Length: 163
Image (cartoon, rainbow, N blue to C red):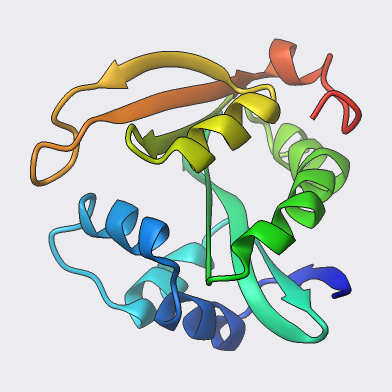
C-alpha cells in the first residue's frame, strides 16, 4: 500500500474519526466529557493538520496545535490500518511538521498518551520525545497518562534516522 501525506481537511478527518481504532477511541473518550467524530475532526483542523492516505483512502490524522504562544500540542489518531501509516507520519514529522512548528515559534511541543497504550508510548519514545512524567488520574475515569515533550533544543539533534 502506498502512503501519501496530504494537508488535513474536514472530510478526511471526519471519516477517520468515524472509524477510529479501539486504542484511539478509548484515549479520546477518557479525555473528553463528550465528543463526536465531527467535533474531533473540527478541533483537529486548528494549527497544523495532516492526513495519511493509503492507496488514496484516508486512514490516519496527525498534527500540532498551538495552546499558547510557544507551546504546541502534538496529536495523532487513526483507523485500523494506522500501523501502516506510522512510517509516513514519522518521516513527515521530522521533514515538515517539526520545522513548521519550530518556525511558528514553538519552544515546547507536548504529547500525552494513555499509560496503558504501549504502542503509543513506544512510538513516542522512538520519535525521541522526552518522557516527563506520569499524570495520575488524568482521564475522566481515573486513567493514568504519560506526558512527553520535545523542546527546541531536543528536536534540533534528532533526525528521521534515529526514529
